[in-house]
Length: 117
Image 1 (cartoon, rainbow, N blue to C red):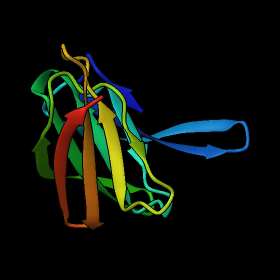
Image 2: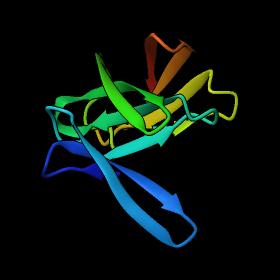
Image 3: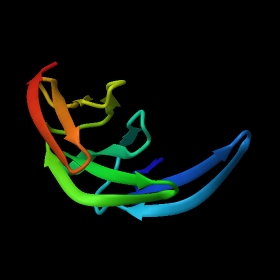
Image 4: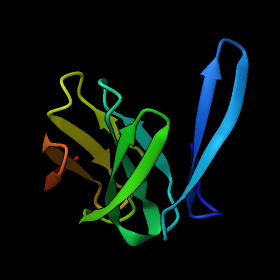
């Protein structure tokens, strides 16, 4: 869960109706949104005012910021990951609007292409 004001991400455990805070991951910048890959092994987080997308790794209940931030268009706010986890899309709030297409070929790298929305 993104915590903009705290510049962090909360890691939650959800068991039925029971939700518990497991950990908090410091991100260094305000985070607007987080998306988890379908296999549950990686996540991408939008760093709204820094104009970046961060790559995180997930191992069980441990979430780690890889410190690999990718510059994207201005003001990325949301992010979606495709069902096969090969790419993601992050619309920006810039004028004119842009959509960043993100390639996620491996757990250790990300790259981007900025296109008109």
